[in-house]
Image (tube, rainbow, N blue to C red; front, side, top):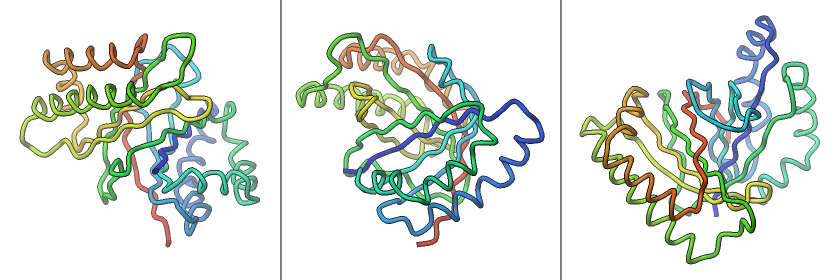
Amino acid sequence: MPVTEFVFIRPKPDTQLRKELDAKLPGVLSGVFSKLPKLDVLCIGSKLGGTSVDTHQQDELCLFLQWQHISGFNSFIGSPEFTTFKESMLPYLAGPPDIQLYESPEDGLFPTKEYPLYLHIMKSRPNGGDTETDSQQRIAINNGWEAFIERSRLASGSDESFEFSLNGFGLRKDNGTFLSITGWRDDKLINLTLNDLDVKHSLQRLQDVAGATGWDQFIFKTQQVTLDK
């Protein structure tokens, strides 16, 4: 199954270093990640806003990757190329990146776009205790999410700003977490849609069935990185 990877990055609060990072990052990523087997999409996201109780996630940048299978991620993490890439980034970072992995359905794929997309990301905060999500609960959560997405599409109007949606269930350290991503052409419509009463009600029902204590939410403007295949 496809795996969606987030890499939350906290750059050092140094203006010159940040300029250097912004200038070099697309080229470095293209050079490192091109021709990697099982990697389909790589985007750089700049955070426009968000709410999170986890200060570690109050980051300004995020890498979004979609792998065809978890084995592609595992192979890269264990490679010399990853070690070299990590070492080249260390001078620019205020702390270690937060890597998150989510298993997505077969049809939950990032689209390839030449223009920027705005991503609205929601990540559930599970209740304490056992965080395993069994198959029946996954079906119930997915049904609740599909209802939320349908209400969001209706509330967004008919201008085709709502581009795509996908979800996922957390792996490894993020086991028990549910992920929702919606992609938009216009970031202004995101908050307008979320403030719709029917959308709020469907989101509350989704939160209830997911057994979550709340949601971390982020909005990112993304730039797709060219990958040579």
